[in-house]
Length: 184
Image (tube, rainbow, N blue to C red):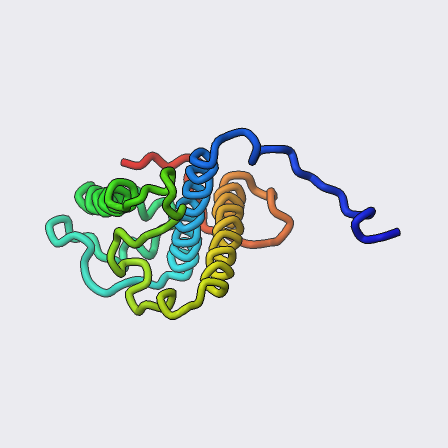
């Protein structure tokens, strides 16, 4: 039996559901969510390890980074002062604005999904990607996509493991956190 005869195709036709613009929107969303989850998973690992910056988070409220590092990861967000949360959300909004409205052409009109050139060296300040040829750059983008998918599973797994005891087969002792955390 040839390899092609043994191969089972699980194609369900999602790529045939929309226009190229719709598929670009899905790919951009997948890349964006993957990047957020990669940062979130690293942040989770830093939070559970107790690593923190020196000094105060808020001078006016006297909250230090050390105080926050003693809390569980999701409780850290709850303990963050409202002004700090607002600054984080404002930074996210600025990044979103730059990537959605400043880039020409837009990814739904012929641009590249996941392109962050509108952030002017924010994502790659050293310029590693500018030194890559087209083939290597395409491979790096595929690696980013796959790592983002894995990070989405990782973040979901950590949240599920914290919420449902015994839901993962490994005996990992995650810090106790609330099942649902409100943003403010």
